[in-house]
Amino acid sequence: MPDWLGALAMGNPTSSTANAVRELFGNPVAGGTSWIEQNALLMAVVWPLLITVVFLPLAVRKFQRLGR
Image (cartoon, rainbow, N blue to C red; front, side, top):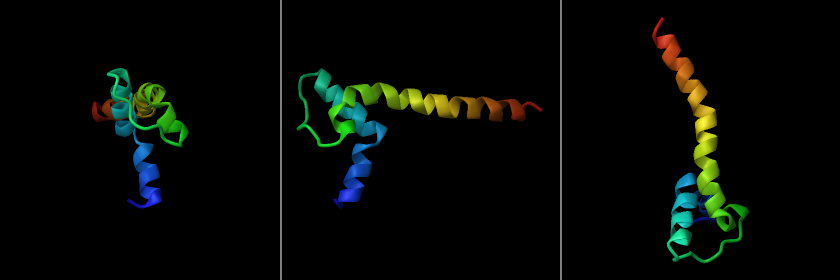
């Protein structure tokens, strides 16, 4: 995998959540070099919150416009 694609893959929410689950069940993966890889548990909580904060208002606004 090219370096740029590997960095993008490690920064996505699914990888953070999978690494956090592995840590919690006692099967941690080899420590990565990026901050996101080293703090997988924190990112497993932050990613869903960030996605919700961004897209919930957009979805509510769209839903309200459908009712008009």
